[in-house]
Structures are given as structure tokens and as C-alpha cells.
Image (cartoon, rainbow, N blue to C red; front, side, top):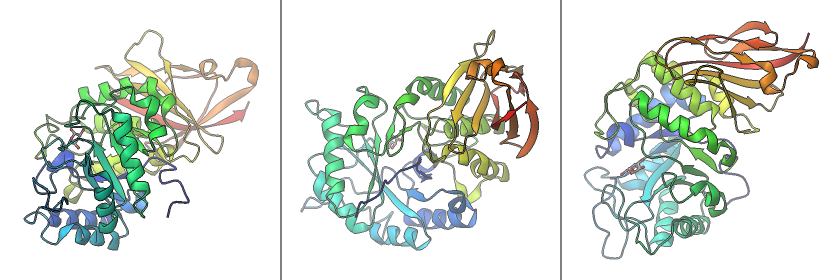
Length: 382
Ligand code: GLA
């Protein structure tokens, strides 16, 4: 049992909600588990396969248990977990702190300990825990603490992924509740507008983000291209440039990386974005430093994210949220590298995977509309 951190770096995996909504079943889970291995996602670090809402019957059994929908999961949840484990992956499931889940299935309110024991018996490794249909007289800190307590007494290590949408000042109390990740925003949609607004809102919350309790900016929409069976998420789609920027933002901002597209039929470009080892290394950096933002003079839609890395390197992300290409200028003075330091920066491009040379005093890469340039830099003497 627990003698280690469950989320020393942001969790990585796949979740059924963005693309499949309530159209889930064991065939989908088995074939997705196969694809996670065969497409190289597990090797890239994506280890959790998470079933979201709509997996159970609409009512509990007479003895109060959650019952898997026999049409969707004819062999039950233990069989699903066993298959996922047999592929070297970890198994995630979904419940809610209210009386019902957001889609109207039974929630875990007042069933926390029995449900946690049931999840442990099935072999669950990760619980996404939502916030719908919560009785008005119950506060969220208490209900997340309670499920945390239930999981910790279940006899199995189960990561608690709180899904509380950033309400009730969640950043301030969630770490003390025992949760390992916390959703900080409303649901993401497959659109540039949604990506932009989530990222912009969470930059100021980076200071609350850290090992074993990461700010979850919601599941990735990379590779959805406006497709999918979820009418709430599938609202038009994005360009590859925008998906690349989305992934780079989530990586730089230490968000969990939970894929939401159908990985069984993903394009080569989607796979390239999702498995970029240089961006994943920034997200999984063992020191888990928060990034900070440098504004760009004269261009309110551009900014730079800066993050210290454990080996002494520095990650620099140049982002352009405007609708036209722009030069995004960073004066090294603004990140503490003064003229008197006698130092410059050596740049490695995390998107082209190439060294791009040494820059002195400033750097101003050209960045496409809604695009980004991401570098790993080392400090060198002049
Ligand atoms: C909420 C969550 C989503 C998803 C749905 C399921 O909206 O924020 O991520 O889990 O519920 O009903």
C-alpha cells in the first residue's frame, strides 16, 4: 500500500468522454488499450485508461452497489480492469460527489466508503470524481476529503482526480483534501476559443500547482478535428497549428495530459503532437516548477512562458494568440539574465528537435497566428 507519491509528475492517459460521451463499452476499452500500446502512447508515458461517466446502470442494486451496465460491459468492470492491466496500463473510472453523476447515473454521496472498496476490488487505479447533484448543505472540501479518506482506506492505491471545475476557490484547499489532480475550469471544447480561454485563465493559478496535486486544465482535444459523439465537446475542431499550441501550453503549464481523441484512428500528425518527447519532458520534469509569464511589449495577444528545469536548463515558450503571425520578442533582461551576467542562451527547438544556436541579449522568433515556438535553453558564458 501507499509508501510513495502517486502523482510525482502530472498523470498521463486517455479518457472516453471527449469523443465517446455515453457510447462506451468494453470493446471500445479493449481496442483502445491495444491502441495505447501499439501506437506507442504507453511508451511515451500515457499509462492511465479512464472510463468517464455513463458506465453503470441508472440505479444501484438492492444492496446499494453500483452496477455496471450489462449491455456496455457484459463481463463487468473487473474484466475491463484486468484487460487494461494485462496491456501494462492502469485503469481509471468515474464517479461523482453528489447523489447523481453529471449524466444522471448514481453518484457516490453517502456511499463513498462502499464505492471505494468496490473500486479497489475491481482493480481501479484512478478515480475521476465529479461535482454534480451535490446536496446544497454539503461543502465541496468536505466531500473531496471524504472520498480521499475512503480511497486511502480501501487497501489499494487509487489516484483521486477531483473534477470540481475551479469553483469554491478550489486552488486554496484542494491539496489539503488529499486529491492528486484538480480540474480548474469548465469543460473544454474542441475549439481554439476554448483552448485560449482555459490557458489564459490558469496562468495566474500556476503558483498552486505542484507534485501530487496538479492543476488539471481538462482533457486534450488534440486530434478530434470536430469529430466525436459528444455534442458538448465536438463544436467544430481546430487546425494542427492550434492543436500543437494546445499541447505545448498544457505541457508547459504542468497540466495532466489526458488524451480525448479516438486513438485507434488518429492521424500521423496527431500522434506526432501527442508523443513529442521534448514537450513531454517539459511536462514531466522531475522538479515540477511552475512557469511564469512575460508579456510582450506592444502585443497584448503574445506572451512568453518561462520554466526552470531540473538539470539547470530553462524552457521558453513563445505564444501568439493573435490572428496574424508576429515576432514575439523576449529581452533576456526580463528573465533575470542581465547584461552584466556575461551569459547567453543556447536554444534547442522542441518542435523541430534541432539545436538552433546561441542568442545574446534577446530573441524574437516569428510565431504563426495561434501558434507557438518552444525551446529548451541552456545558459552559456559569452
Ligand atoms: C462533467 C465533467 C466532464 C465529464 C462529464 C460527464 O461535465 O466536467 O469532464 O466528466 O461531467 O458527465
